[in-house]
Image (cartoon, rainbow over all chains, first blue to last red; front, side):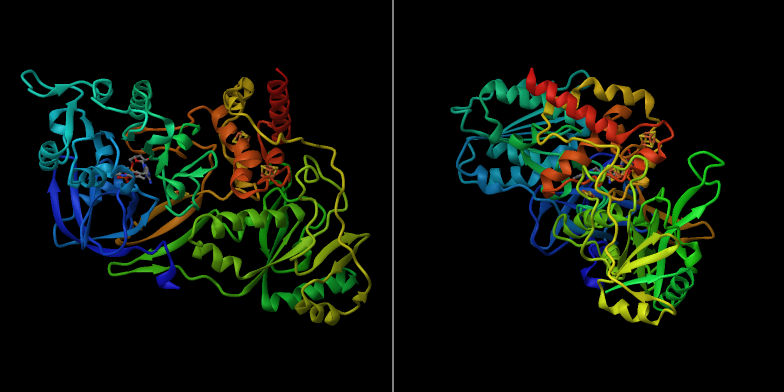
Length: 264
Length: 340
Ligand SMILES: Cc1cc2nc3c(=O)[nH]c(=O)nc-3n(C[C@H](O)[C@H](O)[C@H](O)COP(=O)(O)OP(=O)(O)OC[C@H]3O[C@@H](n4cnc5c(N)ncnc54)[C@H](O)[C@@H]3O)c2cc1C
Ligand code: SF4
Ligand code: SF4
Ligand code: FES
């Protein structure tokens, strides 16, 4: 039964730790197997608990988990170093279908740690032969809170990146303002056929979608990713349920056509 | 095959069964009820036929063996993660039609929601055989007939109906015939378990519940009346939610365990996420979430109603909140909505 028990975590080696901010590190974890951007793992620390964490990067023999330290489990994760290991189970959830975004105009709007689950999607967009019709609007609380700085530079050279912060000390050169401010101005040719991906805190998602719809996006062409409390990732614990959907099973990635009817 | 047994032969039967089976059944606890001085019928492992309460409806649901309030899943030592052991003796669970219909709902989530079967549930489920307690009459707050769960006709091992001091049993699982035949004084007779066909309480559930009902002011009343104690969930034969909990032992911090404990969508903390996020702060919203799951959202996903109409949530509520009453209020609100 051991190999069949989905609650039993497996051990995965920490290949590298990438520090973004004081509170946010990416742990590059040894992993071979099928996994998609937008899926998540349960990081499972014996005696401390488990935390669902999105896949922020995928390689031949690794997955990246970008973790913000906020409490019991995540604090404990930050005590580990390269060469040590973590227990994981997963991947869980449906993930993004990157192929959808190949032959159309695309807008990705992501806020804060919401950039993690879509990093794989943005990466795929920037690797496409012609990324001139791909747009990314990424927002962070302040310049210090920025994640994936090296990626941001690389993406900027390949697709249309708008980087913004909610607030910044005097003298800051970049954009200041919420992501919602930059949607109206995107030079899209055919918004009614364009696709959008929106991931971030609930209020950010709500107001971003309002802006996208003003611009002409259809519900069916907007994709969102949701977070809820999760204790299993397997459709059993019930915490993640919204209406007749289990975020851990049917999501976390949903078409807005479906997600617009979510009421918690 | 049917049998009629007097008290002594039922006692013989139970003693013989106890050699092969653990038996979980309703047990009367004096003065342990909703209020002190009120009796309470709980579920417990019994060692003698006289402990089994066949007359009164239990206050708790028969699910406790399958989904204990707290269950250790994994043990952690410094080197390894180990599954907790489980006694492998077979189990008989005594339950009424509502309880046994509830089993299907538990299976639905633990075995058939998503691809993974919950192994900790399954290993318990594989041990049990249900025993049907017939219902000679309806009890306070029951509305099983409206929920179509007043009958349970297949899949029980045998039934027990207490009629005039005698036990009437219909045996469906042939394995048990030998036990009945061996019980001194058991008479063979055709027996049909009793089912109720009418309850005093009736509910009507609308086929479609329009989204607007979610924001109807009918829920507001419960924001003040309900004290979010969660008892309605803990006694419900169809509630399955749990929370994971890790602990380490205070005398040796290097070892510990992971448990799951029953959770309630009415209780604080159920939705808390990092950064202070919380959904459904108001008790009225929690009530709406619970009620619509029981009479609508579960059905949308699985094709049949979740609630089995046992009325236990009404029996236990310290604030006298009636679930059937809420269903009928929802029905009225939907009718009003459709007609306007
Ligand atoms: C699908 C999904 C993907 C996520 N992806 C990421 C990610 O890529 N990076 C990241 O840093 N965080 C992510 N999170 C959030 C992360 O799971 C929580 O920050 C983490 O569980 C907190 O655990 P903790 O023990 O450190 O905090 P705790 O000490 O438990 O408490 C901090 C807070 O986190 C809440 N919390 C506890 N358990 C959970 C849980 N299982 N799910 C949600 N909240 C919980 C608590 O209620 C509390 O409010 C994701 C969450 C979900 C549901
Ligand atoms: S409805 Fe009653 S039993 Fe349920 S949480 Fe509210 S007060 Fe407690
Ligand atoms: S919701 Fe109430 S009446 Fe329905 S099955 Fe649960 S405890 Fe019984
Ligand atoms: S996380 Fe447990 S049911 Fe979705």
